Image 1 (cartoon, helix red, strand yellow):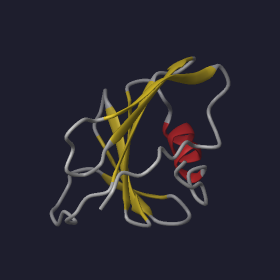
Image 2 (image 1 turned 90 degrees about the horizontal axis):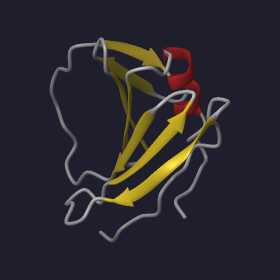
Image 3 (image 1 turned 60 degrees about the vertical axis):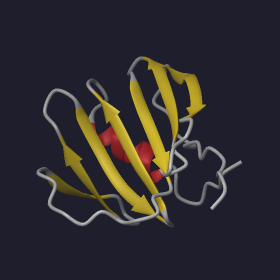
Length: 113
């Protein structure tokens, strides 16, 4: 499997912009990180795992409208979901849950560049 392009959300909260994006070198999952800063600070990690994890993650399910996400953490929250073979993890200590959902939903129908 070759590398894939970065899939950027079509939505970002007001006052937030991409700070940097980078491909994680030597990643078996072809992972990329996109860091955002401004009004809120958050990181979006995208990967194409070869294997799907099976296990229990403590947290609660969030209906994203196109799939279910798993929200974990207290001070540092992570929203994780799979869509069309790509695993996403949105992590932030200050991004509200409703904004996390909007960012996640804006990734639907986006394609890697």
